[in-house]
Length: 400
Image (tube, rainbow, N blue to C red; front, side, top):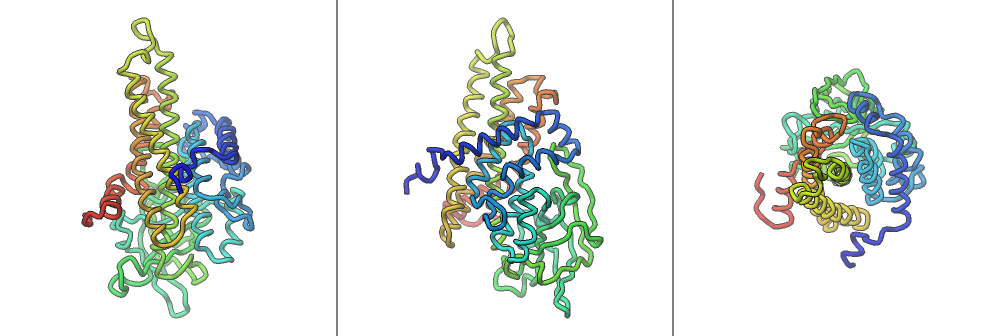
């Protein structure tokens, strides 16, 4: 198969219509709306429009009310929404569509799928995921949250989680906990299980974190004190949850990457318009190479990163098997690295182009700049992406 076939340079009619619909949805919500969202307003109307357009079910099989498509369609939608001003929309899609719909489609029981996928598709159910911990971070096998099985077959879960998005409005939670101690499993990556949990349970205490970036969702630290789960709450195979989680975190990275491409496009478009309109010393500032070259350079990097996102999305949809999954992970990490770095650089160049006006919230550039900086840290920092590429693609010794 040629690279042209992989990347899909000839856009299909379906993808063209998706982009057009995404632009129509985004056009209904201007900068003022997203300022209010970053200040705490729930983007209820926007999310319902996304549901009505079929966006929330794009990866869900048709028998559960979805569109039966894939990650390529999902990243196409997210990129176009963000490119046309839907700031932070990628986070909404990660938390609900990836953590919820993608995980359940891949590993949920038939009962879980029948009960939860349709409400997710319709926008009637909100999801979140509790993975990150204060003492683990990127080192997921080192997580401390433990689910201890009781004599009656239930599990009592104790531990803490950090940087959990949208838990305050979530109806269901993907909870990652260790079910077998590390010293009792052949590999430290085993012994971890995925649970479906109730985020509003009285045995889960939450504390909101003070975050200095604009996001459509609040961030929390969680404490689990005797939270009770049953065997029916297990998603996938007990003790193999970390391997199953790869089917969630790789799409998470690509959706985040698509958002970075979108914000880069949006920032450059705003900067070009400003550079054409802003007149200093009797001519537009865009007439000077000091303005032109950084914008052209940033644009080319965004477009190059976009090709990696397209290729990784195609691989994720079309390949299967252990070796294929390794290749998908490699390209997904490269796509996430390049997209997040290119997206942030584009907002930085746009900020510089605007000069002092770039720091005015009226122009939205500084908000985009702050938000895009998060993408180089999460999901998966640029340094961890480089670690993965060095070890798994280049064959260098493990460095961490």
